[in-house]
Length: 374
Image (cartoon, rainbow, N blue to C red):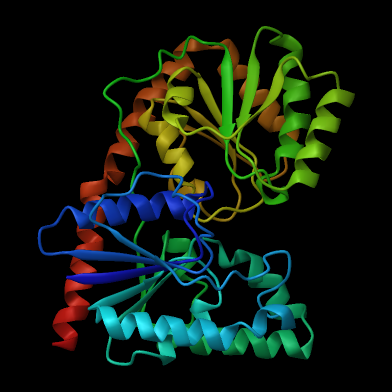
């Protein structure tokens, strides 16, 4: 099976890039699979995750200006070159399936080129963010949403990460496939280190500013505990976070740790995982935390955490109820037995998302598309 995965780049740490490495590596180990990854702006950087040596990379060097919208004139002028180069690569490779991973300009033109080849679009963000704009936007934006709905119908399959997300789509080509676990270690956290952990892109949508407020309340009775946040991202937002941490006198207990290539080890030496996002789709990091035996406390934001967290393995807190979040975090920090019970159940839940189980769904879908086209 020849499969092309299309993504903007694979040199920056992120959930899409990490999941792609897992899927591509699994498929590349199949003797009859040829896996290609086409990027638009790799810029001669090496991938930030490990990829199987049999995977073929090809960067077409479009290099959009990512400080501007893809629909800004400075980027739109590059679109003909982009389409031409992608079409040429597809013609040369002759894939049996094309998968568009990231939400870049490829999304909007891919269904209309290389006809006869099944095309799949992955969605790694929550469509919840479009709910209000679809109701209250100006006429141009409303026509744009109509256009995106039309484009989505033209894909053979749309991949979403949980059942709630499927309700946002107006097509009958939606398939729910969760993200696979990146690891399932042989050992679990002892839950004895007085460390709380969170990880992800440093961006406003992750709600880390809310987490600072929560930590200010929770650490009052837990001065010997630390909160470590791993990740990089928006420099302005990160500065605002650090300033807020300093102003509240929390710099010794709440630490922005930057990026890490080994989040598993960081989780195994922590005792609680926390998530404060405004919205999520299917946060893989929660499954990773569960695989390490960590109990999780998260806002019940749309829509991802509720697909992973239950009262048996953690706690979902009413969105934006910082006081309740802090109270729950205090309870977990004070009660080792509660952490232990929740952590055991968390590990059991994570076992449902092993690479083998999730990739079987992908392979069955690929086979159904190829058989249909045959």
